[in-house]
Amino acid sequence: MISIHGKGVSTGVAGGPLYFYRRAQGTLRRYNVEDRGAEWQRFKDAQAKAIEQLGELAEKAREEAGDEAAMLFETHQLMAEDLDYEEAIESGIKEEGKNAEAVVTDVAVMFAEMFASMDDTYMQARAADVKDVSSRIIDILSGVVQGGIDSDVPVILASDDLAPSETVQLDKAKILGFITSGGSGSSHTAILARTMGIPAIIGVGDQLKSEYEGREVIIDGGTGSIVIDPDEATKEHLMAKRAQILKHQAMLNELKGKENITKDGKTVRIYCNIGSVEDVHTVLENDGGGIGLFRSEFLYLNCDDYPTEEYQFAAYKKVLSDMEGREVVIRTLDIGADKQIDYFQLPKEENPAMGNRALRICLNRPEIFRTQLRALYRASAFGHLCIMFPMVTSVWEVKEAKKMCEQVKKELDEEGIPYDEDVQVGIMIETPAAAIMSDRLAKEVDFFSCGTNDLTQYTLACDRQNNDLGRFFNSHHPAVLRLLKMVADNAHANGIWVGICGELGADLELTETFLSIGIDELSVSPRSVLPLRQKVLNTTVADCRDRLIADLLSDQITI
Ligand code: PEP
Ligand code: MG
Image 1 (spheres, rainbow, N blue to C red):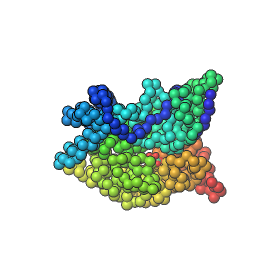
Image 2: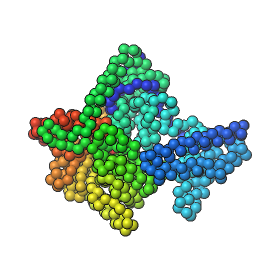
Image 3: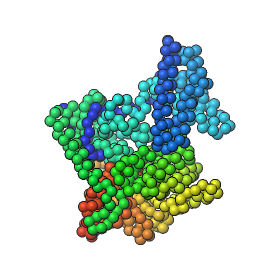
Image 4: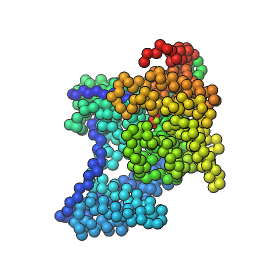
């Protein structure tokens, strides 16, 4: 038995075979084949598999976002068996004797150039499709696994850290838990694990060796402990702990349907953070009162080209309709920093967390922003939508973004397209500048939601992705808590509501503090709703308010 340790970032105990995440290598091999007939057959098999995969993706997209979303994959299916495309590949293999990967690559470039040079914009857009279909076929030919997991049974997934674009593609049904060598508590692998309600351990460094692949492993996301080839006694102990956790979960389930009210009658809204349309069912399953943060950039991460208005409209409409009138806060595009998307072709930056990201991109590239706002306002007719802008630092940014909203509404009026006139528009408070300017910003918006992941990183000058900062990254630092109090006071002085949607919102050690400073909404991962409700039910705010606020403002604070 081998024991190693990391930092637990999502609780729970799980056991299963260890599996290392496979990443595409990206190196193309070129060679001449001897048996041209066999090579052609190899291509035909890969083509058939690609068509099958695309069919499955179309079904998934249809369930999650409707017919419009499914169409993209269906177009790709047609492209994969297009006669001209197939003939060009057949000639490269059968007449020139090249290997299938090389031929598909060359034919894809040739077709993409041909489409791109056409006058018709619809045909120009097919260039991206042919490249996409071809890379799927090449991946199959070269044994790269779509979604990174080639296993028939669910696994404990190990990796260095996963990029957001990788997490969206994972086949979630196959994951029992995560172990990463790098990462941090607010990295997207950790956030994903908490949303899925499965254990995750980060920062194990080089203790995790590739020779452990396939061996039995049990992880405890509460303590950060990992055992490989557990002996019987350890297995029994950890499985008993797992049973205990499941029992506790059953007890929490009894809290479903109850109000979030403290012993002395203060209520707070407990909402959920989601990253995809399919997360809505875990919100409902865990009795979340609404959605306080839908990270819309995951729709963009899931596409190979800018998602169209129709595609986005279908996704937002589905979330709003599935939430049946409950409040849904959709954050506009927040890419840049750790969420990079190739097709945006953003220039490389030395310091992307402080660079061209989120609202900055939207204001600099209004066409992208306009498409998203049109999709959002159109979808607002199907539920209770609030729109939220990320990474604000100045009042002018908010004014400019609001102006775009007004323009979009005017366009929809002219086109006779219905939308909800009462959509609330709010901002995230995730930069110290926004917190400090919150008295002025509050006059421009209907609500604030504090993004404590970024607010902590920018306030403490500690990179949220860096797991080595140890005690310097103190998420309870009074500088952050004081800013939150300032924001809450400024919100209430101006008659607007204030929430927290960063990971700190689920930190039960701070629930009393948040209620004391008057936070109106806590938006957390779906699995954190019931533990948070339990905490709220056991809290008496009046008893602790004065002490906690005095502590926050005290000169004695030494941290
Ligand atoms: C945050 O910064 O706290 C937040 C909720 O946004 P994200 O984690 O997506 O940056
Ligand atoms: Mg953020």
